[in-house]
Image 1: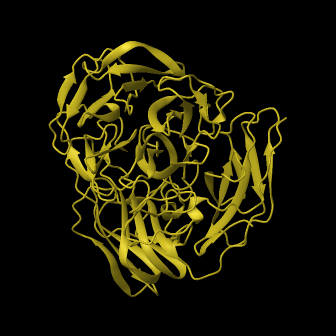
Image 2: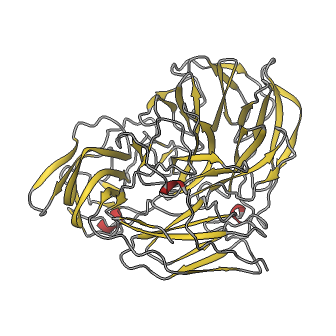
Length: 567
């Protein structure tokens, strides 16, 4: 029986509690990213999809590629993204990968009869075929150019077959050199997070997929996703080697990218990259997976390598507003969290109408997988939240649910148009957001107010929907209340099953006036970089631990007034 080691001390250095960045708060973002997620071609249902993301910094611009998006995006700052439709790339394929080789961007995606594309200026849709008969037919490719100019290729997407790698020839069509090698197998009985199922609970091997390579201080970090893109526990793990094709050693803090709780879940099948300032980021797939298992979104999280060379990703408060840094950061000591708390959770709501099965309360329950829907999509449908006291409102995230939409890829899409108003008494209103002329097709509209407002009531009025009914999976309001912080968590227990140490149950005394809790954990007592957000309960079941590895824990409480760190 492995003993569980509990950490009951204040950990200084979790990035969410670090010093704030001195820069305008408007330079912030909120996951899922505010993009024009395209409707699918799938004829069985109408849903939006973007997943398996890669962010690539090329000539001082960021390019974002994702599955089934009809094109790709580019940006100067990772805040405002411009969509580039593409007719010259196979943008209906899954899991794209790109790499810069000799000032040229090379692109490949999952499909049989493989082609490799290239472009010297990807702002223009002018991609050309570089190799029309790449010899490997595979899924989930990853290109990696080493510092010495040699190029490697990683691939695999299976619940049986391993992830493999092979060297490519940069001087001849990126053809393979020699035979591919097995690099990562399946180990669900040892690594709990690899077990298939919504709670890693169906006894089957998960889908190991979505490989990505990052080199740091001479070591090679081969990342991969598991157990399945549709699950809340979808995450990314990592193996490390001295050589690009191994042998590789499992990093015991895997999955390093993990977000099983909060408004939207999942942080798997992504890409680790550097920004203009040298900061690492991890961009990953987040799951809705209600209308279809591939109904997915994209999330962006800060990442870093610690003093022992372990790769880490910070997902605590990962769907709350985060600042976008404008300098080199130390994520172990500095945080990106804006400290704007959620004001709308489980607050009283009124609506113009409700569709059966989609009551108004579902707009404020912090669950992207269900939603309020009005009875129609007509102008004049509305939702109103009572914050129960006058609060400072800094930002809002309007998450549209597309209820009863029948749109498919290729159909013209009218943008959502709406107005948000604020009030102190629920009678006299003043407009704080005017999207009456909005022309952007976005479904997770994140708005930072030019100036914070004081309000008790917040109301959204529909003007136009793309199709179907006016519906919200989350009408999220961020800012600060004017009450007291919750009490700190006073004692908790951890029970780790002796017959299966991949699983643990945490319980603690409920804290009065707490909105929720953040459970921090890690494999070293001063490195609690993993986290899970818990709403509405004082327990947590963790099913994705690694067998035989000790874990340390801390639990913080929070409400709309701020965070109480466990002392």
